[in-house]
Image (cartoon, rainbow, N blue to C red; front, side, top):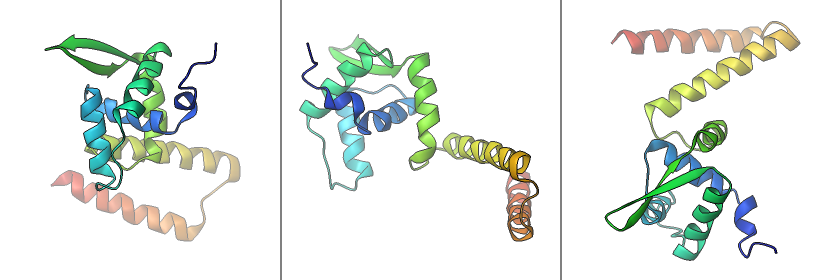
Length: 141
């Protein structure tokens, strides 16, 4: 039998939800409110969108829930954490930890780039050295 909410398995929204759950466990209503907030009120997903998606994410082993005060609180499994970390680079950074993770990912990318294509162009190298100097100053404060 085809799952009635097959769209939720392929929806990019599931990756946004997984990334949101990295910050802390949330209820379905918390997720709805946060999505409304990050879209500046332009979109408020319905419970009929979020709850079936959470059920599918649970079936796929990305999230688990625990009941507390009659509410389901969803959190990531290790599998969900792994996927959320991979896709979080494509979403706006919301915490300092997100920013540092992105910097680490870009550092890995630059190292791979140099390994495959050779030295960075001088203009890029100059910009990167300026960024490094700024970061060193920020860390020293």
